[in-house]
Length: 348
Image (cartoon, rainbow, N blue to C red; front, side, top):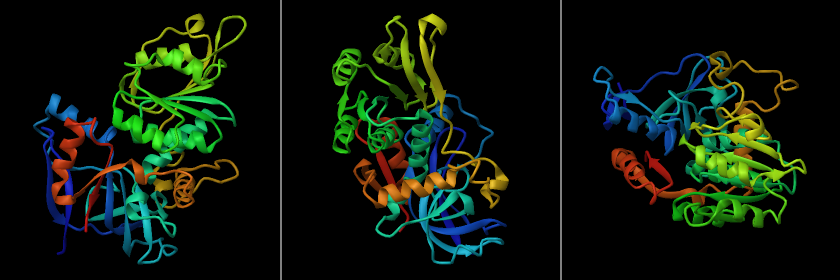
């Protein structure tokens, strides 16, 4: 039987490239010959760090990854609308792996538009996660937005906020990310260790204050949260006003009520409705009149934005590795996060 290569992590956090039988697609799935995949420096490599800090000897090698793109080579039942040979962007943990061949539920795929490369299409999952966060933020034209954390999701949140007609400021500790953010359209990007973010936000917003803050990183985000709160607009009664959207897996300690003011704190989970509903993933749908922006609709919009040049994912790519060098690619992101951002694995 023909084999595939797949990137795995074991209970000790060791990353390997293994060979195994190519799976067959089940009902509602397509088999994709993958061209490119994108390593998520946040969620995926966070798992690696956890395994290294707290080893689990009973856990064998486990495939990982959740964003890739390639060509359909086989269809399961109920996938007649997707032709063999179609170019697809694919997403989903357990499905859109770092591998040469992946079985993916059809609602977690979207056709790659003309002019969009496979490496650009591999960003679709994280782009949809960012777009969902922007929908949760309910931005309006002319609002001032502060994005804390300029990893891939933070970068794309900033770009979508700009595309929504907002003035966007970003902050991060790594100069590379600040440079990329401004190159991709963020109006101002600062290092909060070098520049007071509250004063910078006041000046950036022309004294009005920030309307919406977005926290796009994991771990302890208490300080960033406090900085955003102090940057928000202030009512005449001295209460802070505005919204804060949490899209990263952040932990925050903060008092509510008068200590926070009339600030709306919103969690943004995943790339939209439908993801992790197994029936939906494999072909069922939610009535669009009630659920307009499902995960699949968000994927479609993200790819359209890439095609039209309204968001720029190409400049987020800093490194490319063949799949056989996936361990080195992951180690680069883990050990030198200041030197890399978007890392693409090439299957061919």
